Structures are given as C-alpha cells and as structure tokens.
Length: 91
Image (cartoon, rainbow, N blue to C red; front, side, top):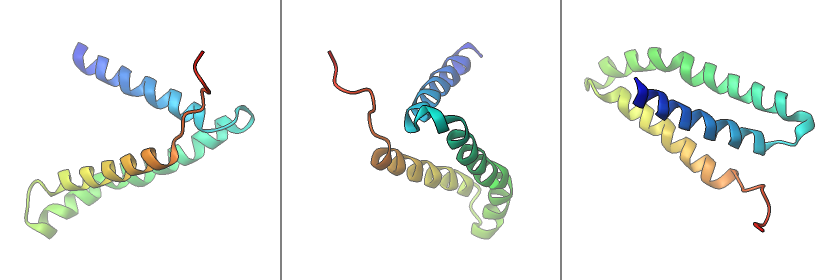
C-alpha cells in the first residue's frame, strides 16, 4: 500500500503542476475543471462498457489492455506536442 501511495502521489503531483501551468491564473480553475471532467467522463465512464464489449467482439481476453495502451499513446503524443515549459530561463 505504501508503494502504491507513493506512485499515486508522484502522479498526482506532476499532473496538478502541469495542469496549473497550462493556463493563465484568471481562467485556471474553469479551464482545468471543464476539460478534465469531460475527459474523465468520456474515457473513465465508458471504459468498463468498452472493455466488456471488446472481449466478445475480438475474442481476445486481453483486448481491454490494448484500449488502455491506445489511450495512453494518444495522451503521450498530446503531451509531447502541446505542453510547453512555462518557467522561463534558469538562473
């Protein structure tokens, strides 16, 4: 449980800092909350249904893992192309 807690803490810390840097302070709350909740509802809310559908449709019990890998690859490409460093030059 400690290892899982450390992994979740590392993820949550990085995600929170990254999302805060994406938007200027005056629109930050809404600009983070709306897309985040839409993404969670679309992917998190439909993931069990899609996983249940993929197994009989493909006949392969591990097909939901490919769905997770696909969404992770889309996220990786988006992060690499869209997210830029905003801290400025180092001293």
